[in-house]
Amino acid sequence: MITRETIRELAAFESTENCAITFYYQPPMPKDKSHREESILVKDLVREALRDSDKEGGRNECARKDLRRILEVAEGLHGNGRRAKAIFADEKHGVWREFDLPPSLAGTQLIVNRRFHLKPLAAVLENVPSVCACLIDRTKARLFRYQDEQMEEVGDYFNELPRRGRSDGFGGYDAGHAERKVANDAKQHYKFVAETMLELYERGFFKMLTVGCRDDQWADIESVLHTNLRNNLLGRFRIDPATATPEQVKDQIERVLDGHLVRRRHDIVAEVIGEAQRNARGALGLRRVLRSLETGEVQILLLGDHFKAAGYECRNCGHIDMRVVEACGMCGQRVEEMDDIGDAILGHALRNGIEVMHIASDQEFEKAGHIAALLRFRADQNTNAALRQAG
Image (cartoon, rainbow, N blue to C red; front, side, top):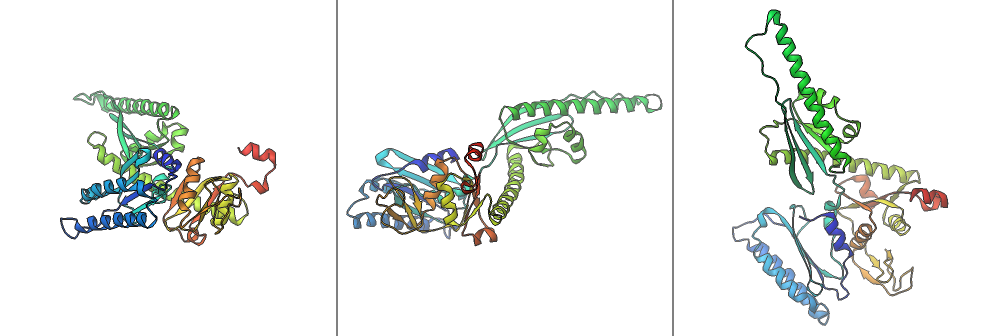
């Protein structure tokens, strides 16, 4: 599994010999059991990379060993269990990182360059919070923690309610008393579990909460949740705490979480566009976003599926520009043109701790050029004192 921290490390890597290899494998729908077509495709990509090396006078000779190794891996994929795969390699610097991914890549591709090609991983970079799932009823509670697509059960609590006798007593009085006792015991059970979750939340064990319970018990459960827990409640679902499997719980968490992320993307896009229209904390389009990255204004970078733009990244000072020039506009050193500066922009964001949000489809966002940013401040509208306060 690939994590955001791993991607940050890959973004910081640079090969001065142009031998950083990126390989993405997207499993096709096989037309026969031999998977011959996918094997042929990878072989063609490797051969093309080797031919490019020969055309450049062997400048990428250092990549040959890794290219052959990738070919060996690809020949054994056979669909890879319907999972995508990413490989990042540079044999000279001892780099070989191999990851299985959800099968949502644009296609199989192989790139040899001075940096790893990370833009296809933009969706993985989204700020997905750690989630606690509490499965609870009157007698039982189970706590799960979900983070980076991994889940573990971290708590199991049982409330042994008093047993009812054979008789309800005179006029049903004993029955009513027993029901009140059961309800009170259940309430104490809910409070104990809620206090346990609050302690875990305050220790940073999770950021968001989901609850699995019966509809008729939700009001009593919600009433004992601390404000911090209610404010970070993603949603709830119906499930039997006693019989639910970890796979069923994971499916429910991901369903609720996906809904939360869709709403958050929509809200952030709307906020950025609104802020930009007010000439405030929104930046739309490549030119404006590049300027905001340069001045350190960006809080969240929004990058679309179809973003692509030519330009350059200066090897000397790291300046990124969309203009085609021979010398860097900041330091005057010679620059190397790039067919797509998306990786340079993404790398800059990761190295500077900027949150990256992947926007798959939004008409208003696409009109802005598939790139935008929510700003922490506007450098041209702040005094030095305000800037210090924003920092």
